[in-house]
Image (cartoon, rainbow over all chains, first blue to last red; front, side, top):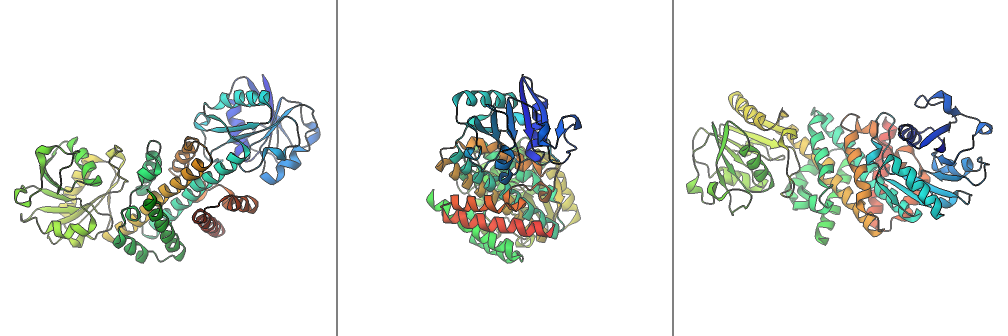
Length: 249
Length: 249
């Protein structure tokens, strides 16, 4: 049984807690959380470092800026200590046995996650620790990838484009619907299909629409329709960007 | 049995042909296509207007600019004639019995579509024709909506944001992965989950990431990482736009 202490109680920590709670061969023996979290049983929560238990693995799942400080609180020797950040280098951890355990997913407290489809990107500086993280990650998902700190940085940027920026486009779509008394429900199957298409087609082969077709009349009609200057600027920028990419094909 | 003539052989026409071929109570008796389409049986294809058959319903599924000209070729009297365009007004059709039959989906020839989840937006100028289109659309999908020409224009703009622009973000994400020797596969579950989340959460409640958190350090690190000026400009614009929306919450 691998004993884990989880540090943090944000979205990622909470979802990891739930995922590990259902896994065999590992036990979360403690969760350090500055404040009580309703999503984690009181019995395992502590908020004072002096009660930190000895474990095989410490998973630090806190905001990027706090990782180094939190790491400095762990005084047990020769333990594997990892963080879960997409943007932070492995080297922020001042230990010999260190690693990264980065689940690439968008976590909201309100939405349950099926961890078996979540990719986990791992990095270590010792081969034996790589084996340990590989084993632990495999308890949650078959999608385990060895990703360096440099690659992880790129991956996080890509994730911002395909997730956060995409969700913002959904939000703009919802606002346009609302302004015109159209139920957003009508657009949801289109959103699903757009995401589904690129599971098997490359995005460049999945593209459709007026920018892709070079349908200037429709583009002009859309620009005239858009009165919100932010949406209009974004429409123009994205249209030009799509057309640059089409030329390169 | 309602007899339908389909005019066009593009993505929408082809998918409609396939959907109607599996439906009861309707028959596509003919498809007018300027050139032969391998996706549609030769037996029903014509490319000369003089062979156009008499039918109950003519569905014009051609490029927006060609709708008016194509409509002028139909000389049968008192028939219901509809187009499938998201952007074109019902009034482009010079008939008393006219309508719009707009399936809101992204159609690519390479990707099969389950029409039962595709919303169809209908519009007519006579109540009896509304009933006919409602009945025909219901053969393909339970998601049938009465949408005016003005609303349809807004819906099409919203669709460009959530589909075409979103797919472009996928393409940028894929390019960033490729440039850093990361398999795009790693990002696909995130894309699926991002689309899945807004089926039950409003997009504003589903947002995550550095822009939403106001994590300026990560934003700066990402901007430094991005060397492609187009991606960098888009990153800045989207980040600011997300932050404007957060302020309004």
